[in-house]
Image 1 (tube, rainbow, N blue to C red):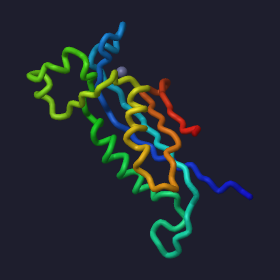
Image 2 (cartoon, rainbow, N blue to C red):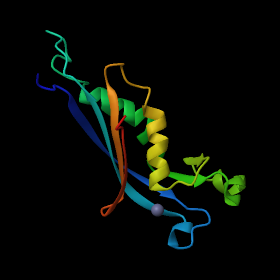
Image 3 (cartoon, helix red, strand yellow):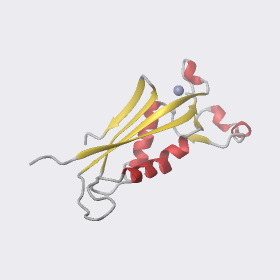
Image 4 (cartoon, protein in one colour):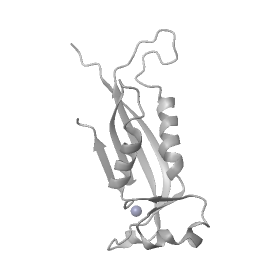
Length: 149
Ligand SMILES: [Zn+2]
């Protein structure tokens, strides 16, 4: 029998500043990227005759809202720092910005992917799996997590 599983991807863009504490190079400075994010889920298109989601695994707009609410809106135009870095304690400096995210890890592309996986992994219906999270930091660099079970 034909495997009817479909992988469904939604793409996002956001601008984010970060600094890599202790990095031996340019990335120790506060700098920014236009990130591209691709969230892929997998499932079997369901028949819901007459319903708005007939023939879908998940409505793209539902996936879009979920990822925007949980991830993109928190990171877009934010300054993201490793909370273990000394400058993360400089409240006087940081409180001048509206969007600062102190994360308990080095905000590399790899760690940001794992952070997103942690957030999203249990947010879908039981018949839908998070399949992959791909984060492009530059046009030539990306990190990807794939759920190969
Ligand atoms: Zn960077």
